[in-house]
Image (cartoon, rainbow, N blue to C red; front, side):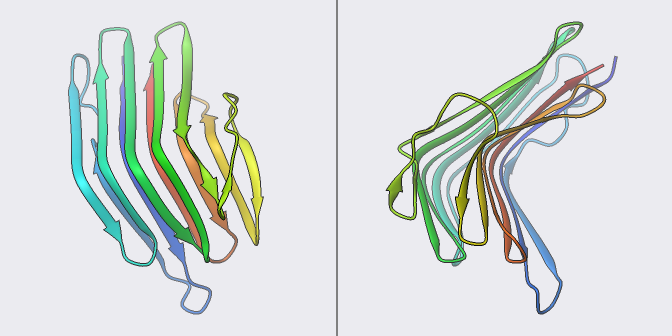
Length: 175
């Protein structure tokens, strides 16, 4: 059996039209599990990316069993600014799980989400999309690849040609 799982708390890819350079910054990444009965975690009390993000209590964890892998990433007190749009939340959590023969599932929870100063009702369904100037915010973004590996991004902010910001990512796959 092959196990592929990791959780990461933050991934930011900033795009600049003038220079066509991409920059990715990752905080609290567990990396990929080595195999059965492996567990990894990573944490960070506070972190910031200048002109983009401030947040606290980053935590990422992944664990594998003989027939299951589980992953979670979380953070608190999110203050994010993308293309001048303020996004805040008290907590952001992504969870992913894959069970041999049963498939993969995921979820996310975001408390007190505000985009541009407006409170957002977060549904429990995957891929809730909110339009913002020049792009969108995807809440509880979930994708499953051809191997059954699930990726859950609790919050994904895309401003075309400007920024692609992912907050709290959990990945789980087993085959």
